[in-house]
Amino acid sequence: MPTLIREAPLPEAPAAPSVGRAGGMLPSLTGMRWAAAFLVFAFHTYKFGYYGPEDEKAVAWATRSGSVGVMFFFVLSGFVLTWSARPKDRFFSFFRRRLARIYPIHVLTAILALVLAFTVLPWLRDGERTSPEAIVANLLLVSSWKYEWWQAANPVSWSLVCEAFFYACFPLLYAVLRRVGPTVLTAVAVLCILAVAYQPDDYYLYSFPPARLPEFVLGIAVARLVQLGKWRGPGLEGAVALTLIGYFAVPLVAGDHYWTALIGLTLLIAAGAAADIKGEPSMWRRPVLVKLGEWSFAFYMIHLLVMHSLRLWVGEKPKLDTLPAFGLVALAFAVSLALAALLYTYVEEPGRRLVLGKTRLTLRRRR
Image (cartoon, rainbow, N blue to C red; front, side, top):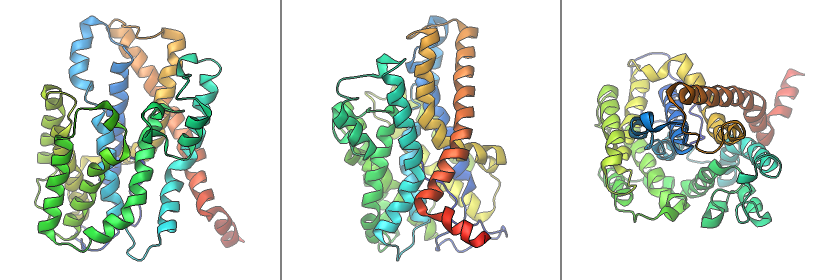
């Protein structure tokens, strides 16, 4: 979810570069990250009860599957880490770089959430989720291993706990999957989709890191197929169409199984990467979408705290008429986006450089 797709420059020439090597920016995937983050935001506007009876049914149809945005982030993480992998990388160097991407904003938003919970937003305060043990577990990125703590501190940070687990697993997974051929990779991808499709309908598994691992492994397998030049999926237009079908079919599937969206999302990621490799047109590569994609992690991390804060003004599940409801959505979106831009500029990027020790290196070079 939080991985930035910019590990190496995109080849300038549109002629297809060697897809077997790591590297090559994939700006289309950065643009797609924004769409996924917005889906999660839209889903939460529905869950917060912004819409009155006249709009609720239509909005539910359009937004209640928005949590598949997190699924997109998990698949994308596996794809991007594989794409940018350094075969001789050391585990701790790799893990440090990954944590540098997510940890500064994680810590800041966790502190902000706790300050709000113990001052003006008492509904964020919970005996289990805000206990000292849960807070420590959250800061150590292990809180959602215990169901009662899965929304400790900043509620959306449970997905970072899953990401941290994926990061820990990645070196071993990559070492195995980079040595197998297209047939095995295809079989792994199919098995991952089946694992998601047949996962028990248990809400506990939604935030349990091992239960979400198949989505990450799926991203690794598909990335390897693209790198090997063996990917045979549809182009961007076809992938978008299949993604939309899968997304809107989700509410029609019994229970909360999101595998119908998973197939389309996986095809979309691969198609976006292939378009960037070949220099083909891609709406997702537009500068505004790429910039929003860079802000998407900060947006994801702050938007729920903004929406909780707005409850001070509109109350719980206000069920507003059409214009006030969409006005409230616009306000929540604008505030979240503005804060995301600030967090990216003044926390995420400087914090990453600080964790990696690049600030001191930059100063030395300037001298």
